[in-house]
Structure formats: structure tokens, C-alpha cells
Length: 514
Ligand code: DGJ
Image (tube, rainbow, N blue to C red; front, side, top):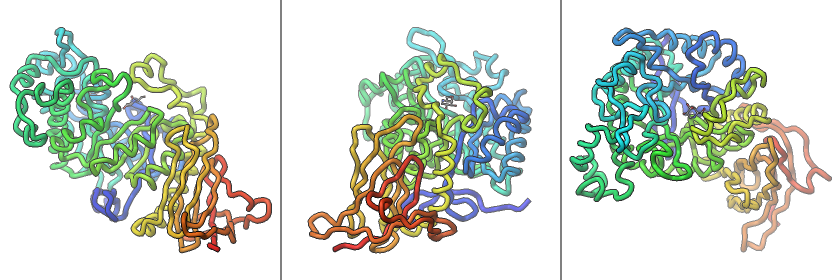
């Protein structure tokens, strides 16, 4: 098999960018349901046919520790082989999710031999002494076993994946502790009472006990330190074997905003500094976004130079606009709605997540409302693919402007381009339609390319310049193979007001200032 250059994340035009086959690459992805990749036939019948027609280039899929090491020390990579073979046949890439010691703040994917031995692989405890269903990050033996299994996985990929079907690996999944702010198992308690380790003191320039340093947030900082150190041990070893880009993902802080109601110690924004200092093998911390504030959350996860990758996100119709904003607004590495195979699935066949599980996961049921999503997401992904070369060409000069409605109360926005102010009037949100948003490229001094949804567009001369803008030519069309492919020339009634409807239209606009 041909050996290609390793995927890597490196600086390009001032942004951390994923390079695949030595070219910038944006993941236009979708994550499959948790159990999908454990069944080859299920993937064949229910997943690949349903993701084929969504404009995706990458599938995000789990690798389960319980499947690859069913007996301690005996490895079976058949589930990985199935994924590699099927993805290559479909001409799709993979991001693999390592469901190891921690998945959604529990230890549900560890092999049964580990589940049975609770003495060696001890669990976190509440202050009351009650055991929680999560193996403690202070259990050195458990972390060692995970590190060993993960390293074997990476070695296997190194051997089997010279063509680089696998682009990146997520280490663990929505890590943290639910049900308590911090682990009170005897080993954890001892560590807590021993005070902050030097590395934490140095990073935060604080001293004293955890409590003195972090006050009421001590428990969460302590758990973030413990989980980040464990992940670093696992990811670092895996990377030394096969250095693919690695990241971990977060169950976000949510109402009622108390660690333990969301996983305490996970990579929420507040814990970035701890995670980045303690887990330098990770190139980013990724948000799983089921809350309604998708664009704001994406903005938040670009802070502290954190490149945006969204491995899981709501799959309502708004995902089409959110995908565009992730790429052109946040300069993201990728976007991937969760349970993507359902978008094109026969509704009768959808194995809906029971309301009790959604409540336990604190997921807004509307996040899984799929009316219109397949059609809109496909259009958005295809548009992004076509526009990426133009984006790389114009971005260095500041000639790409993305916009999106972040709050239902927003009436609109004004894009300040060179020589013109462009007013975008947001339309009312409609059920089953994407959110208002889009992107504007300034092609030349007086020429713009605009892709938008659910908004009106008005052109002005620059404020204070005394000039007005006149629309002298309006065309609809497509941007394909690096150039404009015109459709209708819009004039007369169709030019009196420039308006974007419920799916991305592309306009080429020529203006004049008078
Ligand atoms: C977030 C988790 O990371 C996913 O694996 C999945 O459980 C979804 N929640 C909900 O279905």
C-alpha cells in the first residue's frame, strides 16, 4: 500500500489548519451513533448507504476498548479493519473515537475483565462513600491498561493505514465525573490533601491547598488536573507510536452550572488552561454542542488559540448554517452532526434515543429534530467544498466575511467590506428551516460573491463617505472549479430587493459608488 504523508495540524495563514496529503483539509463530517461501528452488517445496511449522499468527506466513528481487547492482552482489531475497508470503498476518511476508560463520564466501554475487577480498577466515590460508575483517574493500573490498549491501536493503524484513511483520533469521550464535584476515593482524597502539585502551582502561579488556590472551584480544577494527566499519559504514548493529531471532547457546562451535573474536570472552557498545560499532546479541546447557542459555543472554543473542531453537534436544520459559520467564521478544522446516519434513514427504522436517556444526558430534544436537515446540510457541505479555494485565496487580505444570527432578538448585522457596508436583514426563524447566516467574499473592488440564507441584502457606500452604492448587475449561479458559473441575470422585479431564501443561493453582485 502506498504510504502518504501523515495528517498534521499546522499553522497556515495564521490559523491552525489540518493538512491531509499535504493540502489544507476541512472535515465535513458526521458522527455515527455509539453502537454502529460494533456491527459490520449494521454499518453496511444502515450507515454507509445513508451517509453517501450528504456531501460529507469524513465519518467520525468509535473504536471500542471492549471489542479490541476482549481478553486481557489479546487484541482483536476486526472492528477497525471493517471501518478502514468500508471507508476506503466509500472514498471517505475517518476520525476515530477511542472509547476507552471514559465515555460520557462513565466507564461503560472498558472490557468486562476490567469491569469485574473493581478492587484493582477502583471507582470514584462520593464524599458519602457511594461508588460512582466511573473508574478513578487516580487508578494508575487502569490508566496503564488503557495506555497499553490505545498504544496497540495506534501501532495497528500505523501498520495498516499507510494511505491515511484515519485523519485524527479522539482520546476518550466526554470525560469527567458526574454525580459529584470530585472523587473522594481514598487515593484521590490523599492526593487532594497533599496539595497542589508543582506543575499546577507553576502554571497558575498560585500556592497553598487546592481549596486556597481555587476556592469553591477547587474540586473541578482538581479533577481537571487528574483527568488531563491521565489523558496525557494515554495520548502521549499513542502519539509516540503513531503521531496522528489527537484531541478530546467536552460535555459542555450547562444549567444548573454545577460541576457534577455536567462532568466535573472535563475540558469545558473554564478548564482550558489546566487541560492545555497538563495534556500538551492534544492539539485541541472540542465542544459537543447540543445547547441552542451553537455559534456562540463555537466562538468560545476558538479562544486561547484553540482550533475549532466540532465532533458532535445538533442535527436540526440550523446545522447547515452552523457548518458554514464553523468553517468561514471560526476558521474551523471540521464540523460533524451526531447520529448523522439518521438524516437520510427511513423514519420507521430510526432507533430513537429514549427520553430518559436524553434527560440523563441533558440533551435538548429539539437538537435531534431532523426536518429538512439532510437537504440543507448537503447543500452547505457542497458549497463549502466549492468555496474553500476562494476562501484560502481571499482570507489573507481580510476579504471573507461570515455572519450568522446568534440570538433570536438580533435584527441583522452590517458587514464592513472595503469601500462598502453591506446590510443584512435577518428573516424570522421558521420551523424546519436553517438559521439565518452566510458568507460574503469580496472578489474585486466592486464585485462580491454572496452565499446566504433567510436574509435581505442592501448595499451602502461607506458610512460618512457621502457615497451611495448602486447595484449594476446581479447574477445567480454557482462557484465551481474555481470560477463563477452564471445562471440567471436578475433584473427588473427580481433585482428590486436582493433576498436569500431558505437554502443557500449564490449571488455575484457588481456595484458602483456614486
Ligand atoms: C454525547 C456523547 O458524546 C455521544 O457519544 C452520545 O452519547 C450523545 N451524547 C447522545 O446521543
